[in-house]
Length: 277
Image (cartoon, rainbow, N blue to C red):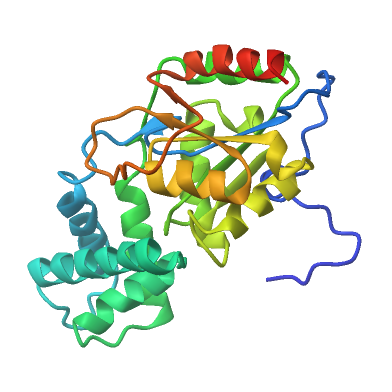
């Protein structure tokens, strides 16, 4: 890989991840709310059969690996899928308990270690490529997402994305591009690129910093009471819960700043907050 010179220019996608590159002639807000930060899955887009699909994803990762690295004997497909599922569950347990984060290679390496299977860097990347291929075109978009983001941009709000994930940023970027969301977001943040995950206050504070606004001038919108709502509120943001019936924890002590069933409903809450401040 060539070294970066001091004059090297970041790609448009890198600029988005760093909070740069959105220089449209849009109004600048001076109100109490200046930026909206969105969760990704369950908020802007969805993977409706997440749990049911998990064996397919890891199975395709295995098949891709074995087909391209057939010079050695690999564990069975069933053992591979089981180990990778355990590694993924262990990652999410650490997120829930310690609010840490991991990169994709760390998660898969944990899976191989559970198999007592030494793996080269090349084979690890091949297994990751297989998983990446399995999720192409899988995500769906909520019907009101694009129109709501367009309206928010028209009103001058800075827009960010903050997603808890172990997936590579490029995998999510492909979904954003496929659904026309990339150009609508000023800042894109995945916790696989960060030292912590939601609800750790660092990630919310970092989102505000990259958006160039004060933390208390931000609203976080997400589908999880603990990660999105409580985390944002403890960091100093408003926290809006996108109502859903998924079995995520819903502690009684978490009181969302607002509850919405569709993103369109966010607009009326923003108007009310602006009028009362």
